[in-house]
Amino acid sequence: MKCPKCDHEQSPGLECEACGIVFEKYLEMQERLAQPLLTLSDRTPSRASGLHLSRWIRIAVSIVILGAIFAFAMRLTQKAPSGESPTQPATKKLEISGITQQLYQFKQPGNAIETSQLATVFIETPWGSGSGFFIDSTCRILTNKHVLTIDEEEIKGLRRDIQVLEYVIANKNQSITDAEGTAPFVVDPTQSVEINDYIQEQQKNSDALTERYIDLKSRLMAIEENRDNPTYTVVLFDDSSFSVTGATFSENHDLAMLELDQEACPCLKAGKSKALKVGQPVFTIGNPMGLSHTVTSGIVSGRRTHEERTYIQTDAPINPGNSGGPLIDEKGRVVGINTMILANTEGIGFAIPIETALDEFEELKR
Image (cartoon, rainbow, N blue to C red; front, side, top):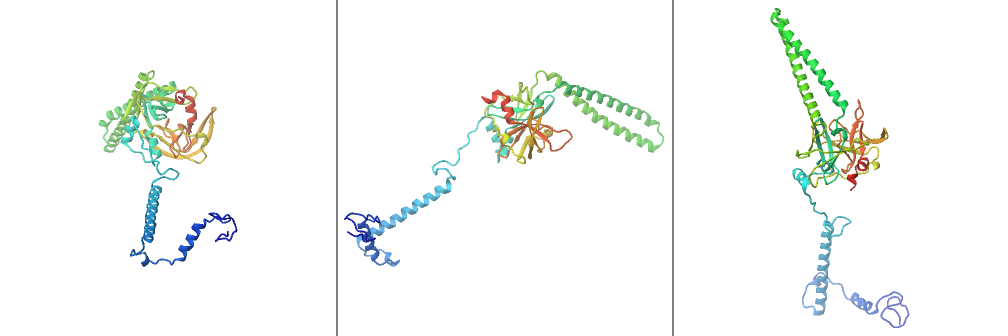
């Protein structure tokens, strides 16, 4: 037989061996094509035969079904994130508890930096203050050793400052007494006014020095009373505070670790300091001059080695009170612990790589 479409000669069968058409369906198609096309008015149901009406009903139903499937698929496409199954939830509800829940109720962070703020703490000691941060959810805190300790040289320097203040205050008070004794015998009104002004100025200076003296004496007393068994106060972002009496100190680095007797603390995820590039933006979080949870920014300036220890150099401001706080990247991952600045300079700060801290404390590896 000959194929009605491509004229291929073959044995009788259901389909063409050359072009693959099904003979019966091909002939039905040809018959339908021979009929005139319908106009819009031709689509109006009237006295059409039952066969023709049934066929158009099937076509209409098919169009409706296909339209519904297309609309449903479009809604799923709009709801489902790219790369995820449409039936998979776009987000998973964050389950929080403990200290994390407490802090999230106080403030809902709006970005990675604000989230890192919640994991940063303010540390007060009998001899000063500094910063730290939660490194895991069991409420362990990393900070600098020098934030939690004070050496004998610092104490000696404090005692010297107190002695100098005692001498200066005594001299000022004596000069005030002498001036007060002279004032009644001065006849010249101009000189009398000058002496009174002098007395007031010296008295003001004496009061300021006395206040400083009392502050240093109180500090020295607190150090001497608490040096062997200090109590550290950890202040969180919401100003709640906790007392800690024990600390673990690094033997090789300016690092220390505290632990709160609490649960589910917000913690910083450790980044990779070795992957940092020069010029990459970084941020510090700390408590400079008591300004709680202050964020400053800068860039990575390089990597430096001092006394066989490696540091991250940054121009992000590290002020008194920032010591022990985290150096983080744009995603909020901690890459270092702020530890020191170069004396008599601006914009030259150093941080201990986070890997060094994680290697130093075996507890953090469990």
